[in-house]
Image (cartoon, rainbow, N blue to C red; front, side, top):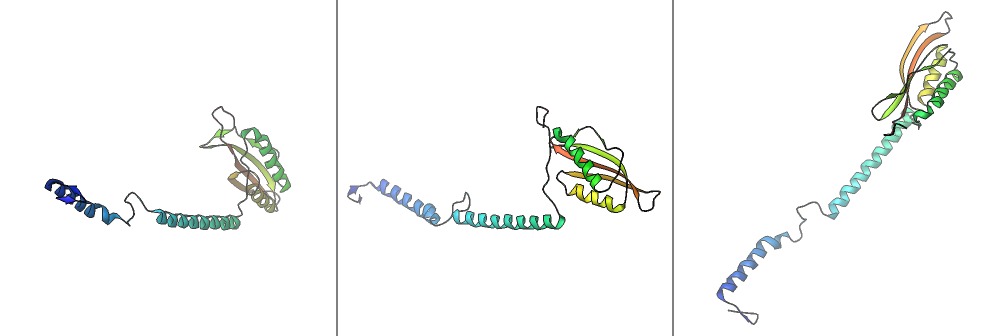
Length: 179
């Protein structure tokens, strides 16, 4: 057998034919298709665009919700700043018209990923002053949760006696024990 000027045996000709047939069956049909490992560049680009649109929609939704709820930026202080946080509570309470003899604080306690201190005080005030305090403390510069708010009638009918407890949150301590 003669192929392109080269002499081939019958056996080599059959082998060449089988190789060409295998190429036609297994390789040629795959031209123009995406590889099986994953999507091609066009599909990845479409997926990224879709993801970006979803993120933008979520950011807008979150921003609208923050405006509706009145969420503000706050500072998560270190435990070393506990005295400043205590002074802040005292100042906001007095500005809101809450008179109380003492503000007590628990020891610093560890939570999962944070630390906290509980604060308690009993104040005699008008209801409007109490509402003003709660609004200011929850929308203020530090992160607080109002744990309890027990109210009793005062001898003066225009006042209430409020027994309040709240938690102030602090950054978690690092491995060395400091925040």
